[in-house]
Figure 1: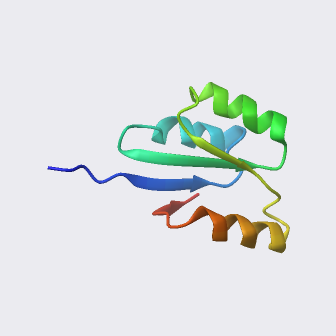
Figure 2 (figure 1 turned 90 degrees about the horizontal axis):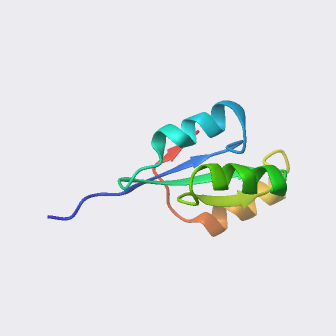
Length: 80
């Protein structure tokens, strides 16, 4: 029997509530992608998750960057 793995994208996942949410969700049954504008903060957050999440640096307030991110990302189940 195969287990379904869901994918959660967390915008602003490099600190605060977004990072806390990522820490709660990271598990074998949940693929997590965190995003943020600052590459250094994003890398530190990713390391704090044990490298078990995906990460992507982009400015969600920039429509062109956001569109490119979601186009490249592919399907996901949850957006925070």
